[in-house]
Length: 226
Image 1 (cartoon, rainbow, N blue to C red):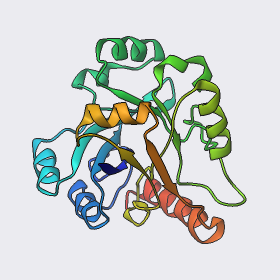
Image 2: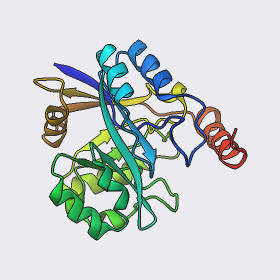
Image 3: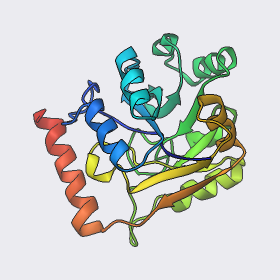
Image 4: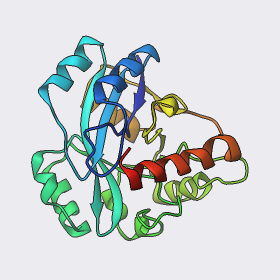
């Protein structure tokens, strides 16, 4: 079966970003759009509520809790972690945590977006940490950080997986992966991605009419809390 998966999503549970929709809103929109897998990856907060699992299951969606953790100033997406992930602050600690928790899946998010929190070539200093590199939705004809991300993934022999890094539900469906699995489960999904049994669905966005306004709105919400 094919699972339509979004592996990087934020909602109003996020205490470091001003998000104007709840995770239930995201589930409702995901159901309308035919998603089979949805994560919740708040910045530096692991949100794993029983009601989110129940509501996702009611919609036939596999919910994967996760976190976008800041490690030595860089963002790292960790899927299916335990609460102990909140104590991880360095790459060395993350390596030890991964050895002790093999059920997790670590994505290098937007590694070449140009932000101070992007991994950039830090990715090459810790190659064994990552299970996949993110193909960001944030690209256009004239601005495309995915070219460097694809080259890095190829150099490290890692899969390049599309996500929407959702902060705005309008963009939930612009970049995602269709993953071929035997069953709708977390282990099956992670194994399929590691074995590259997926197809990325993504398209370039308008620099002037989508990307620039998105950045301006995001900055406004960040500084005003609105």
